[in-house]
Structures are given as C-alpha cells and as structure tokens.
Length: 262
Ligand SMILES: Nc1ncnc2c1ncn2[C@@H]1O[C@H](COP(=O)(O)OP(=O)(O)O)[C@@H](O)[C@H]1O
Ligand SMILES: [Mg+2]
Image 1: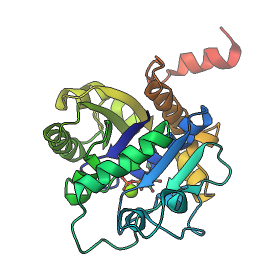
Image 2: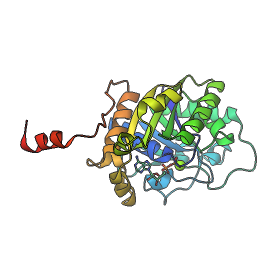
Image 3: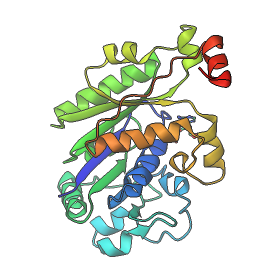
Image 4: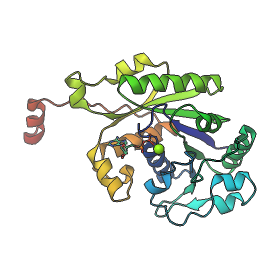
C-alpha cells in the first residue's frame, strides 16, 4: 500500500512545485515507483518542471468525471525510471469537487504506486482542502520569514482539523550568510514558531535555478546543494536516518586548512 504525500505551504511561491518535482524524481531514483500529481488547477506548472508540457492529453478531472481511465491519464516522465505524472486541468472547475472522489483517486494511486506526491495550490482554500482529503502525510514548505511561517502555521492547523497526523516542515531557500548576519531566521527559530517536526532544510541555490532554466531538476545536478537536500528528504521519507545538513559558514582558517590539508 503506497503513501499519499501532499506538498503544501500556505503562502505562495515558497517552492512547493520545485519540492514536489525533486522529491518525486529522488524517490523514483531510489527505485520507488512514484507518481507526481499536479493538484494546482488553473496554475499548473509541475509539467514544466518535469519537461512534460507537450504530450499531455488528459487531466485528473477527466478521470474523476469518467472521461478517461487511470491508464489514460498517467504520463511516463521522460528520462526517469519509475516516475509517472498526472496533470491538473488548465482551468478551475466551475462545480465543487467531491472529496469522496478525491479519496477514491488517492486509493487507486495507493494501490498502484509506492509514493504519490501531490503538489497543492497555495493558500488554504478549496484546492488545498480536497488535496488533503485522505492524504497520509503533508510536507509544509516554508521560507525562513515571519509571513511565510505564519501562513504555514495556518496550513498546519487546517491539516490537523482535517485529520492529517503526519505533518512535517521543509524550510526552503535558506541563506547561511544572511542567518549569520541575523537577517534571516535560523532553523531553530523557525521550528519554535511552528509545532511540527522538520524533515529538511534546503539552501537557496543558484544551481537549482541553472538546472531549471535547462528544464532539468536539481536532484540530477551534482553541483546543487538544494538537490542534495531534496535527496536527503527523499531518503528520510523512505525511513532512513540522515542527519540534517550543516550550513555553518566556514571561517577563513577552516577554508585555508581545506586548501592546504589538515
Ligand atoms: N531552494 C531554492 N533555491 C533557489 N530557487 C528556488 C528554490 N526553491 C524554489 N526556487 C525558485 O522559487 C520560485 C518559486 O518556486 P515554486 O516551486 O514554483 O513555488 P510554488 O510552487 O510554491 O509557487 C521558482 O522560480 C523556483 O525556481
Ligand atoms: Mg506551484
């Protein structure tokens, strides 16, 4: 029986889609049969992150409304073994989506895949709520800033109300030099503001942007620190114990020692 993992945030633009795509790719690279589902209707962009924008015929609403089967809606991610994708509709549906239908959808995916990673819309509106219906785990992606953490806290409360017990925090776009100058909150300060455990810290990483511009994912870029962080989170989701990366900025002497040997 697979696991449905919802990637959520509260505030927009914190890196949900980036996280979902990289975790999906990292889980599949570990040999886990994985499906990435874009639940961000109207603003779908997980397909772009995966380089799949062409070749999408059906979306999950087509399947929920009986216009196609699960096999029709599943798209194999090019260049990734064990990774499939399901698109969101390009426009928001006029009618309300029944939560029971989404629960049935998650059950279908649990039966077929080891991991189902769902990229959810920002905010705690309808799209967030039905994605949460029957999900096993929620990963809250936040930036290390008050506004983002406050919205993350609201998302956590909404998820708890919805009955999701397994909620974990990802702090994204951390900048160690800014933390050192006290211009950004550190991980402990972020954790103090929220009541959920942390599953990973991801650095603000130029290499990730470089990869994205080439239509590639950070997890496939060995130079990307963010890519390594996402791989570590995937390992933790698989039950491995991996220490959280240290971002302590090295002193001049420490760097000198590295160059000339200890
Ligand atoms: N760790 C990171 N380092 C650098 N840029 C990042 C990082 N995470 C996300 N981004 C960038 O931030 C922007 C928003 O990310 P996205 O995943 O689309 O957010 P969301 O889905 O929450 O709206 C994108 O341009 C993405 O490339
Ligand atoms: Mg997004």
